Image (cartoon, rainbow, N blue to C red; front, side, top):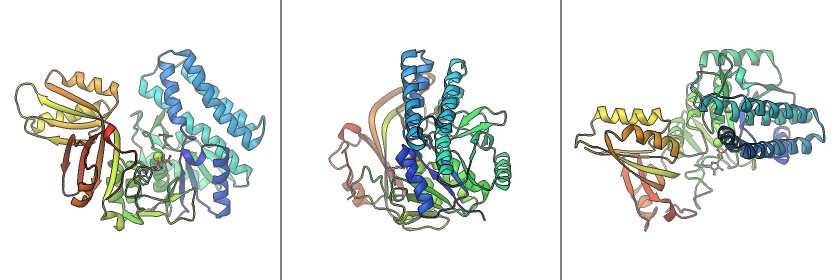
Length: 429
Ligand code: ADP
Ligand code: ASP
Ligand code: MG
């Protein structure tokens, strides 16, 4: 079996110091992964989304300003690492010129334009990281994920062509001896049109490499020591999980535990490849291990918060049932507009859904449903999902706050609260 695949996210390469720390991590701990998958630096993907908005609304002033900010952030990092006028800076300039040129001539539909634009974040970051690793003596081969991760043309949420992707990755690994370094998040159709795997999709990219290269493990390096039973940034007394099964990890990720992208687990599970979540800030801290067997994390309650939720009540105009056929049509309409029900409850004549607050998508959904249904929306909500809930925990969480709606099954409890009533930091009872 080949050595591991590592994935480094935006925070771990956010500036020159962070990139130096990544290099030190590999050298000081004598780590020898087979491949690295790297995200865009810091919040570059958000900056590229804003750039795209400016380009599509023909706001030239905002566009120039935003492009310049992205340019400066990358060139500053290159200068701090390699000094003035380096070949790396020249390579970044070429990419930034391509990004700009792509915009000037792009009349494509939004999803195609989106993928072409935001993919530059990873192209820029990997150019910097690969150059730095070579500089410090780690022989690194920069690979273009658009020639490796082959997908369909479902832009912004592309599906992987596993056969072709595996063929190309295995061929590359047989040919190149050095450390393979590629972009997370992006791929391309077989015709070479850039696609993306969905926001936060670099974890999934790393799992694709791990699966196709049949490695002995995938390690995702984070700014937290591992997976916790609640987001440690938002819950005072969150506890780290030592071990959990792929299945439980999928459940938590699916309900919105931001630390791992939900699509990451399946490719690993299919080959029983263990996943380690480990801290790049404290590499010696005990990590979380995810694998085929159940662990402590499979039994204990876990809490997941999702902000910016809109509760949508859908009621047929004609006093008819919300039967399976209607339910199917409403959910298909939701999926058609790129929305997903984070909370769902069906009564005889009413469907209640909570969706992410994405106004353009919601308007399109509502206008499709309006003819047949009475629609009521309530925005400004936070969804709390508890896996393996206990009465004690539910009693203590959110006590004294307004519960807009709630539901409970044997494995999860969900509650929607007005966000303005939610505490800055929560406490697990
Ligand atoms: P990356 O950019 O490397 O993909 P993310 O920001 O996506 O990193 O994920 C790391 C963050 O996930 C942490 O900073 C933490 O605040 C958050 N997080 C949310 N839920 C959890 C959880 N259950 N356990 C650990 N971290 C969590
Ligand atoms: N850069 C992409 C994003 O911010 C992918 C990732 O970081 O996983 O969504
Ligand atoms: Mg992430």
